Length: 192
Image 1 (tube, rainbow, N blue to C red):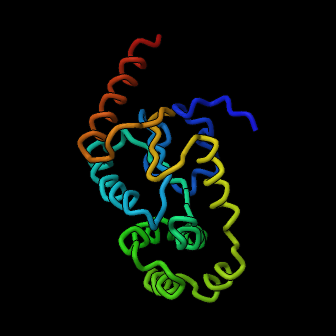
Image 2 (spheres, rainbow, N blue to C red):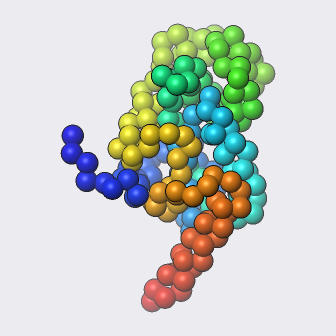
């Protein structure tokens, strides 16, 4: 497979299937795509700063989450991503997403069922979907898009299609996003 992308640009654009895992207005000047892994501690740290970023930027940010399980390093990451998808099918993706990051060290099957119960999910359906890997293809699509975008580790961020390479802390990420807002506003003001 030939790679034409230098991995500094998002080669797999925002698509209709991304709508499942987005927050904010699609016409916001900033699109932040995160490839994450529920078992990765660095993804967990990044997860904790995203709400602060969203609060600071308000309606200026559109956040997209894509799964990037790394089962050889994090053996529970695939199951956790599938559990999030199953919860999403029952209208509770973000609630399960937050729970999985909060409980990163407790992601075996028993805990996943417990989280589903706490969220009020249909447990027989949840169990069927987990057993049948009903949403594994969705998780795999995200993972494949990550590979095509040069993602090798999590978290991986793209801001308006450009790979974010700086430190993944609140101040650095916020500063980069504010600069992107400024650039977008300058471009918009120059366009007739």
